[in-house]
Length: 66
Image (tube, rainbow, N blue to C red; front, side, top):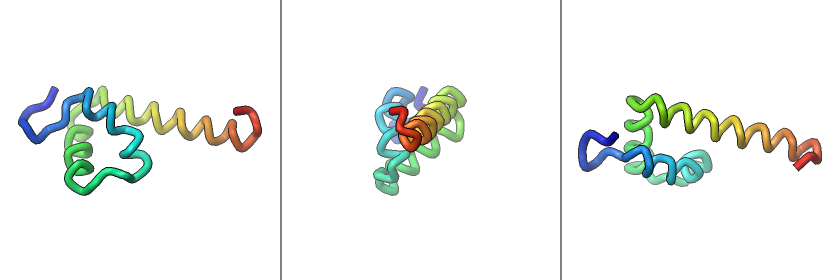
């Protein structure tokens, strides 16, 4: 849950995960994203899971399995 108008909600963060992982967030949005992750355990877990999925898909792709 967001604590001020400048904070991201969990839903907003989830929508920005791809842009975050691809380095496409601007400085202000990146700061909001990082600030949310600093206090939200659920979203930190979600970002970790997405990173792991992307990594595993890359490994499978290099092996010709995807």
